[in-house]
Length: 162
Image 1 (tube, one colour):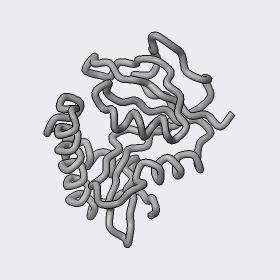
Image 2 (image 1 turned 120 degrees about the vertical axis):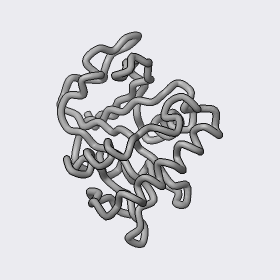
Image 3 (image 1 turned 180 degrees about the vertical axis):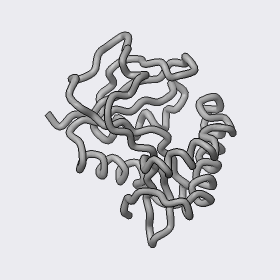
Image 4 (image 1 turned 90 degrees about the horizontal axis):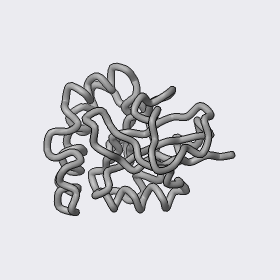
């Protein structure tokens, strides 16, 4: 598997991946984090245009997707019940999803991120136990609670090479 920036021609595949991920989240006890409406097609088009949308491909077909942001994440400015591992520059992983057809999507995405940054931050919903296990299995430490734009809490994690 390999990671590359998404292209406009990937949009249909990406939306199918997100639809499958939404179904999986709902079926596994996490119906509220994304529901069936997040992320929107408009948001993904914007992510592609801004070159932050990445796809994870096997045999040149996307099987996973994530958004990768550089710089400060506004919702990470305030953290409660803990603290970040450090205040060094970091990248943030958002909207990671898999079509469920290939194993190791999360690990592949994180390996890519680790190759370009010594600090990675990510968050997830308290009901998303599948993602929590993946995050922790890949060396991230739980740092506290952050609040996303709609005000709902997320468990915040960080990985640091240092």
